[in-house]
Every structure is written in C-alpha cells, then in structure tokens.
Length: 149
Image 1 (spheres, rainbow, N blue to C red):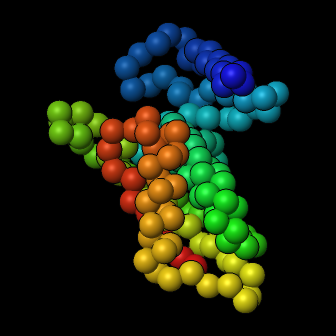
Image 2: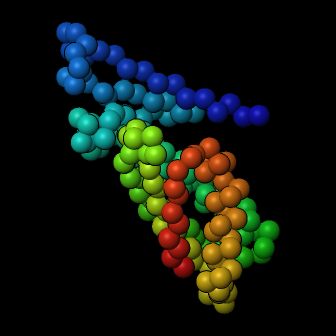
Image 3: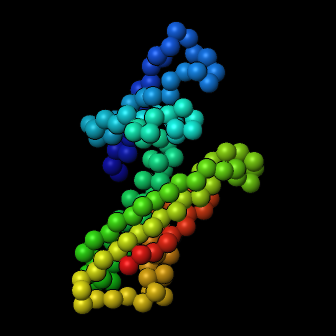
C-alpha cells in the first residue's frame, strides 16, 4: 500500500498560548510539496491559505473524479475533460456538534463531440462513483452531486 501520510508543523507565534488569540497558521507537507494552511477565515484564518474544510472538499472531489474516470473508462465513455467546483458547508450534526455537514460536488464533464449520455445513465454513473469513492465511504454525512455535462 502507498504511503498515505502527510507532515504538519505549527509553532507558537505569540508569547503564550491563549484562547482565541493564537495563530492557527501552519505548514502541511504532502509528497515534498508544502502548503500554507490555517483555519477558515471566519475562525481567524487567512483567505489565501487552505483550511481543513477546503482540504476535505478537495479530497472528496478528487476521489470522486478518479472513481468516475475509472468507471467511465471501463464503459468506454470518451471523456475529454472533467472540472469541479466543490463546496463544503459547516453546520451541526445530529449530535449537535459543529462539522462539515454537507459537501456539494458540481462536476462539469465534456465528452467527444459525437458522444452523449442520458441523464438517467449519468445519474447512475455518478451514484456508482460516489458509492465506490474511498473518501466518500469514510464520511458519515451528506455529499450532494450536481452534474453538469
């Protein structure tokens, strides 16, 4: 199995660690690539740095896409491009705890010009892609898929 690890480093930037005052900025290393990260802006983070909620949306979007492409290739669907604009939503779960309670995927799929898929077949393929996505199977709340062909 592949090494699926990341490295994370945070250092205190203030004189002492105090509630709601400390910096949430940290560095994440993935496969020798470094990313500046922090909390979402409404929790004191910077807009130009990734946050955990965006990372989760990116992980499920990427996994869903790769699963879709694997299935589409087996069905001999001539996919030319795939784009997505994923959104993570914060809210409370059934236990009243803050969480990412919904992720919305908005795949835009372009096929060869001589190929088309019915809405019913696309819905089935997206459902299968979601059911086989490793990351989706790791989550307990909603992932909504809004298809754009």
